[in-house]
Each structure stands twice: as C-alpha cells, then as structure tokens.
Image (cartoon, rainbow, N blue to C red; front, side, top):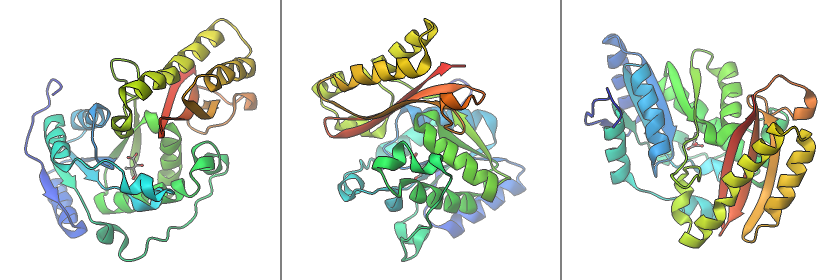
Length: 291
Ligand code: PAF
C-alpha cells in the first residue's frame, strides 16, 4: 500500500441502481468521484491507477467487467483470466471505496450489438487492424460506464495508449464533464509491461517477450544518436521480426494523443508503440522516445 492510502473494505455494487445511490450519497457528503475501469485480473498496474485516484479525489470506484463486445476472438474472451477474490483484496489494499461488478445483462440488457465508431486512423489502424470492432466495444462500454458512474475523473493506463487516445476523443464528445487522466505504464522487475495476459506466458515465452521492451529502448537509443526516425523504426522492426518466437504485428512512431505519424510534423511527444504475439499471447508495449 502506498503512503497515505488507507485500506477500507470496499462496497460491492452489482447493479446500476445501487451504484447510482452510492455515488449520489457520496456527492451529498461532498466527495468527488474517481473512476478506474478494469476487466479484472488486477495487477500492480491497476493498483497504481487506484492509488493515483485515491490521492486525487475523495472516493474511488473501480469497475470489474469483462466486456464481451471488445473481443473479436471467442477464445480470448472465454479464456480471459478471472480472479475476483484476489481483485477485491487488491482494490482494498490500493484504496478503492467501491467495486462495481455488473453482469452482462446489467450493462447490455439482451443486445450485444454496438455502434461502429470512426475516429479515422485512430480507430482503423494499429490495434484495430488485427482486432476489428475492438474499439467499437471499448467505446460502447466506457460510454455506458461513464454514464453509470458519472465520475469527475477517470484513470486509464498508458500501456493501452491507443485505447487512451480513443477514450479521450469519445469523452470530449459525449462526457465533457469527465476528466480523462492518463497514468504511466508500469513494468515488472524484468522490464516486461504489466498486463493481465502475462499470466499466460511460460518461463520460456516470457524470456522471449523481453525482446519487446528491449526493442523500444534500442529505438530510443538510435534516435538519441541522431538516426533519421523512419530509418530507425525500419531497422528495429526488422531486428524484432528476426527474433524467434516473436510475431510482430506493428512497431510505429506516433504522436501520443492523436497517433499522428512522425512524418506529419505534429507537435510531440512521440511514442514508439508495438504489438506482438509471443507464445500465443498478444502483448502491447510502448515508450516515449521523442519528447
Ligand atoms: O483496458 C481495459 O481493461 C478495458 O479495455 C476497459 C477500459 C476496462 C474497457 O472494458
């Protein structure tokens, strides 16, 4: 537990009505509401979001909901790790006040059809290429959760940098009263970006996966040495594709908030973003390489 955060037993809320009453009551008591949306299988990266929220606002609501509409692969959805008991303990230790754990019916009634979203390259490129419809589902559920929780601030990890940019765009249009806060990516001691999916790596595939953060640091280093950015990206992409066991989906240099290309000349910061499959597990990573 980080300094200054008091562990209290969080209230478990399963229905939107209960949630509304709890939030209304906290507001009457003069508290601001911070919100950390998650799909459970919580780890230290999620805890860091809750700790930041607990330091910022009076009350922290954490949602735990494995959202079916953002999976384009049935086995990815059905195999998504579920660790509810450990999750509740983590929320408690990280200073969360309420956990919203709705059912699929509570969120979607009986209709899992979601509206397609089009934010240009932001919802068509990178993650969207291999996961068609993914951001339609993310936008649908975050929109529904914002409407249910009505937070003052909502906290998202920069590990899912494209998701963060999509959510910021959606919130600016549909929930301008919610401040979306991006929080730093957290790494394990060996350098691997924390992810709920890491539990599916074996000792061997985890060792191979360390090529991902290594590639990002190599790119940053080449840029610091003055290499022309597009050349540096191509070089590191080729090096990573040559690593046995790594199936690279993309490695790119993009502006943090818009995902505009470096070639667009947009004001930075620029992040190297990558996705790769290692041992059947899709992993994301990113690093600020030009500030
Ligand atoms: O990042 C996640 O865990 C999910 O995409 C989110 C934002 C909770 C929506 O389901």
